[in-house]
Image 1: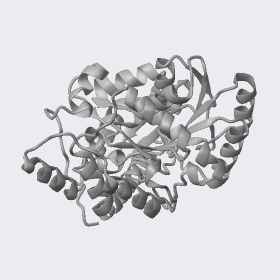
Image 2: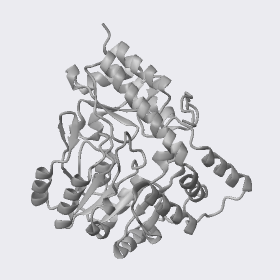
Image 3: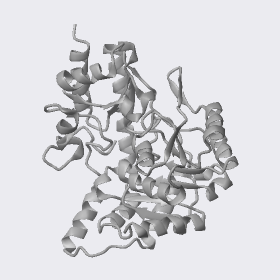
Image 4: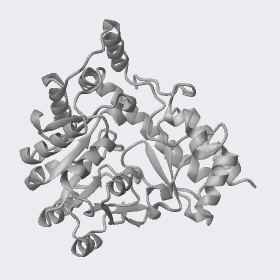
Length: 391
């Protein structure tokens, strides 16, 4: 490993959502933030160098996405996922949640049903409800420590609710699944059969662990090219969420123009001056850093699993296949979520994302962010062990 991720970074006083808002949001005092999905690692050196180079020019006018920007995405997507996309399929947006809202507004109308698979990243159902659409839930099945898609239930709710859109989380946040080809093939068959437009959120697709392989939804079936949109971003992979770089891939030209027209109506056009150059640079030079990052996350996941088995066997780690977000099963404690949260916040001094945030199916679980030094992860786990399991 070339990059050293063992540095423990305390980010208080940096306008960090994760660190500076944690006490207010969780109503605690001096909490260790193991919640929101950004990393406590410095971004690759090439990112910092690029920012300094732009800043030193001293001019901060309007910036545009030029051919170099789109080329970097096309090359990266093929190199990482063996899938060919075209430059003109890509639209810049300032964030994935923005993309979700814009896609919902572009391709559905008020009252339409949209499928999600809970427990799932909560902006999915919040975006649906905020736009006066209907959440149609196809809960994931949890059997023998692994989550799977319930296709029988999916077919049933499609017949009953007649939804027009589905938001797929691939890889899945928070349960960490990397969907296999057979699963995606069945899913795409069902959605295409019923003309359900699929938004595939693939922002964690570069963070696949333990030799699993991400398969882009758009590459599963030729029909998906005409009936889907894919959300991608370098922000999770390289810890750059604050730079607001995100992209939407829509292959169908008519749908793409509808989407871009809606972006224009909302005043979303030019990226910030750092975004375009930094994405190009990090996709060109960030491979080795990302390889080291994934190795470190895997090490932290293994450490987490080992610590739980040795010290807190009542808490089970759902086997992670992707992301730096670990999904922990607390149900064997036979405590209500509110009681566990109270202990974690007031005694353990830890902020985790409680499971019901991701839908009622998440009740009894907690999500912990392991994208930090192993020293910080160890401190968090020891705090939990010394309070939740106090003898």
